[in-house]
Amino acid sequence: MDEDARLMLRFGDGDRAAFETLFRRYTPPLIHFLARMVGDRARAEELTQDVFVRIHQARERYEPRARFSTWMFGIARRLALNELDRAHRKRESSLEQAADRTGGELDRASADPGPEELVSAARTGERIDRALEALPERQRTALVLRTDQRLSYDEIAQVLDTTPASVKSLLNRARTQLVGALKEET
Amino acid sequence: MNGCSRFGEDVSAHRDGELTGEARSAFDAHLPACDACRSALDLLEQLDRELDAMPRPEPPADFERRFWERIEQLEAPAQEVPRSGRVRAWLEALRSNVSAPTRVEWLVPAGAAAALAIALLVAFPRTQEPAPVDRDWALASDADGFELVLAEDPELFRDLELLEVWDGLEEI
Image (cartoon, rainbow over all chains, first blue to last red; front, side, top):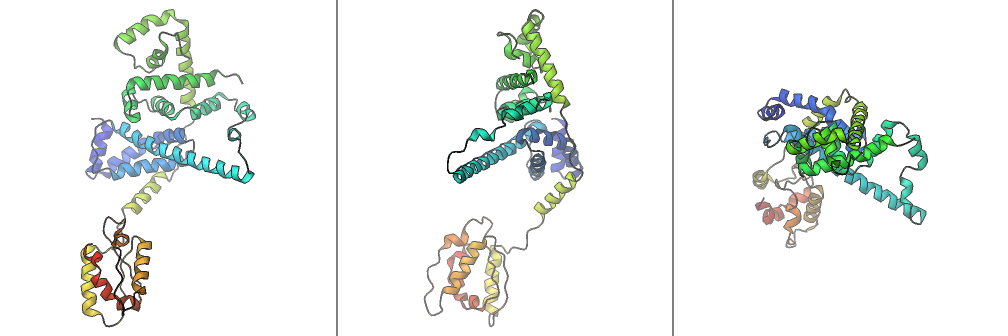
């Protein structure tokens, strides 16, 4: 059993300091992970609080079936997916309303950054940032968990509810995309 | 980035230390002779440096305080809610004490259902047989039981007989 799982069990027995240790340890990586997932720092902070609320509320029924971090990132990912779905529906609704106002079909491509914006994002970091945001969710999740959190393929597979072989493929595809951004001529 | 066609995905897994056993041995033997795979590994190292260099701002100073405030709000005791047995006790007390309108306060978790209940009660004239009461709306959506808030209203107490015969309350 990993140390964090032991801390969670101690919290379930009433040790608030154990929870505070977990809270302080995982707040920065959770905010970073969720910011990568939803693309909004402020919203990522709110979602991080949501993750810890759920962990706090689960204290009496927690069972360490996996590493604590795997369980925690699984919660975070589900909240991120809900947020992405909500944002997508809101965007679709806004586009439809705008189309109604203009009396015709809105060119949805106009919602994407135009050539001028792409050229202006000349710094490598910005290009990689954009490439990361453009990844399909599962590739982005796998990459962030691997590069930022150093989760193993087995652990990432548990978070994504898939196999380590699938994680290997997801990471390869994600990195291919990002290396493309790295090599892009400005 | 892919490396050569034979060991394409293994480049990434090798970088992560996830190649094991025979797969690892085969890749290790292959790497020195393959420019494409060595180039791909170099690019992955460069990518990792860029990703590591991305800013990771600290959480706001009040982040933890706000969290505990939220927990306090979530775990604050609910306002006093009479449970099912208390509804019956209230009715008994009211039967024995009713002579003038008396203020009684319960809590309503489903405000719309309670408002409808009150409207129905007030609408039934005393000289008529009470209309059949649909229980579903009264018991809807509150798994913990149904509690009723009655504002001070003399007409509600004149309809106490209706409450007494309302089977829905007996089942709560």
